[in-house]
Image 1 (cartoon, rainbow, N blue to C red):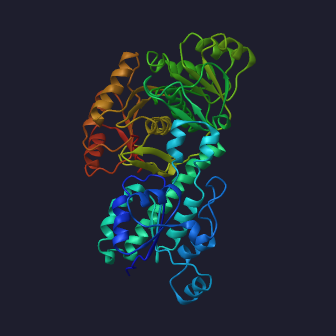
Image 2 (image 1 turned 135 degrees about the horizontal axis):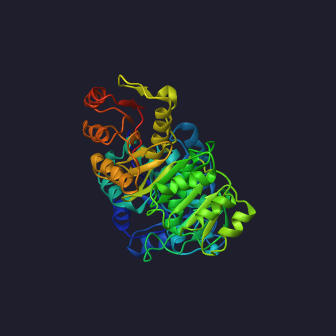
Length: 494
């Protein structure tokens, strides 16, 4: 059902682009109420407007902090257009308000420009948020416009008000609620947390900041300030190590968010040596993380390598004294693992959000699809391999042997290329690939990968399955006495 707009309340921060919409409202005989700078702008283009003070009987007070927070404003917006509510509007001389146009104070934009608390506080919109929520709640009777990007569309809709049906009003209401949610989230993050400027972004010409309470997760023991790239790599390291929180001593070496070294062993020093052996060249300048306390024997081995960051839940005193001799090294104590919060990324002119990939296959979920079952040691390595490949950029392949990453391929446009990269790395660092297992983050569209693996002496494979040509890979494995297990879970990481 369409609603004819008879009155509108307009209070916007950005005035650009509003003239056409306001002119159309005037041509349609709409009574326009407005505030402050918006009122002056509308008057400057020759269109009559009523100040909200005339409606409320109160002036704008407290340096403009209170202008629209009044029953005569919110009553006109929230009233249902039915007898009981309309009678109350008449009793208290409150006009119906059919259109609310609010462009909020630019808190997010200001946050990018300054960390001055006094400036930011004044950019927290109160009345505007309340107006948007009230109008959005009553979308059956009110059209709410929450962004300057909607002005042009509304101007067109006003040409034929029959187009302002409930479906349109509901869509605009949904956008208003999203806008207020994002706005409140930005303010909540700033008020409840802290915003830390970083040395620079991925490159020196890019500015960067971190917003959050890092001290809840990590305690900085010593070293230079963390950079943007450090934080991204530290996040990757902590997320991968979280998979081994309750495992035997495990070491991970991260470079550019990917694990170039990973191993579990009976002792911390053995885990370190095995992880480093996976790719000692890439480990240079990397991020190191262990799930156990660092002892002196391990610190002595680590001390020979140049690295950016070392993370562990604790350090023996003599180990820390040795590691701290190089003052620029960043040493972090891991206090707790972060929650599996949704992953949020900027995308085009907005953001995309998804659940964190916390899934790892249980033994009961792993299905053997070949005639040959995996041995107990192969199954252990296959589970280890699925964890490792889950944290590699797609397309990803990991080669595991005795709970050690001996080769990995990541970020390749072809799964075959990822496998070849993994094999070449393993060969380069002197590993005997025979008897290793292979994990793929996604299914094999063709049997070429299992054929290459077989030729290298790899006889056990774990993959999600799901290709229409799965059987081709299974048949090859059966024909060459190989084991294949499928998990049903893909682990793309873009």
